[in-house]
Amino acid sequence: MTTSPALSNTSPACFSMHPDEIWNLAVDTDLVCPYYGEQYFIYGRWQRDVMEDICGSISGKTVLDIGCGGLRFGAFILPEIGNGHYYGIDPYYKFLAFGQKLVDRLGCTGKATLIQSNKFEFPINIQVDFAMSQSVFTHMSETQIIECLEKMRPIMKRGGKLVFTYLRTNIPEGHHDGKLYQEEMPVICAYLAGPKIFRDFAEKYHLQLEEGYVKIPHPSKQHTAILTF
Amino acid sequence: MTTALLQFEALGHSDADLKAYRTEIFRTDKPGYVLIKGFLKPHLAEHLAQFWNIAPPSPQFFDSTRTEVKSIGQKPFAYYGNRRTSYHNYLWNKPLDELSHGVCFIVTMLRNQLEQQPIHRHLIPNASLMASYRVVTTRNVEGVEVEDHTDWNEPENDYLRYNRQLTQATLFLSRYGVDYEGDGFSFTTNTGERVRFGPDITVEPGDLIIWRYANVHGVGSNKALPGGLGFSRMIFPYEQISLTPQVAKSDFAQKAGTRLEKVFRGLSKRRLQEKFGRLVKKK
Image 1 (cartoon, rainbow over the protein chains, first blue to last red):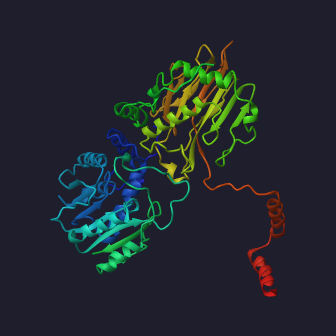
Image 2 (cartoon, chains in turn orange, red):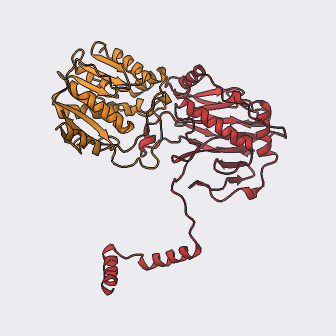
Image 3 (tube, each protein chain N blue to C red):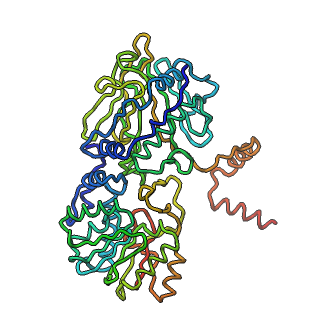
């Protein structure tokens, strides 16, 4: 193989596909995206580690994965999640098609509910312990972020946590200008959103906002915050 | 020279074609390249070959000293040698040959489509990688012309470290066995097999290969046949440029800067603070 080396040492035992397998599965879904190779494991592992750090454990929790894409986070927690306790939402059908293939490949078919929506149409009858929004708000307008947070409020358990990432500086020169969703969805380039809108939202609803979570640094140095409902 | 109008069919690849190309290029069990036969019609390929080999632009259009691209506005670069010539063109300059410029646009747009990137990517200076094109003709190189290497496979660069999706392209402008003989262009496939375009895989003028940039590739020994052009091809490298405008310094500013630099060279930060502190106090 001439592709990049495997990162088997970064793959937890519960999710041990070779990066080439992930990449080929994405190519078969007609997705050519740099995040579906080695980076899949780097970002997936980070999200899993953060959840474990904050929640103590994965099992027994109901998880909402906002902008779940091809289940970078989901793949790392599904084997430990109870049946029907993982909800992934994303507007792009190709990512979800890839995610569904992966769910099946992992033998976790009954565990995941994947929702295609760009209006944050979360299931109304769930109570979420932990929500993740990794590198998602960075591509949303402020209106979208607020809409997302507002729609989360009724479905988050009291004390439920949302971990999200955001940017506080401009994208450095040289960073790729890659698009998301192959131009089929209205997604904006990464930009500075926050922290004011998050502070205002937390203040409005008397929620606790912890900015600057650094215990497990984000792989691409985005800022990480925790909102407790 | 023939009239060279770029035909729009060069842009018209169906979604099914693109998906098939992606599979060939990107799946790890596939070759890592796609060969598009007749990408350019023969008269267009002939125009390119003739323009750059028979009647190339005058050397005054080129900078022949500056090999490294630093910023927008830089002149084209030319390398003249007995064994090979190479013309490096940048899209921000006025085209020396309209067709060549156009070909660079359509090839880059096709690469963008294959990489599922914005169609304008690398064509306008809104990010630090800009497309460029080189027309290289080898007439007599024995041994290795370009060592086997990979590009954009840099462990220190966050963006490139694990990027599997960048592609490069080679447009062939001359014919193996007629214009040249030798090793042609060598490429190592995704499965580790070494192939040579020219001697092993037949390519005609106007044929295009799009290949994974990070795969090992090189150019070995090639020699022009009597009456032949040599091994002539067009490649489309991305150049890393600075987006910061380069402001030309006046002579005065340059001289003043150099003198100030001499005065302060070797002074520690503390010493500088003392020096300026004294000046401020005197005021």
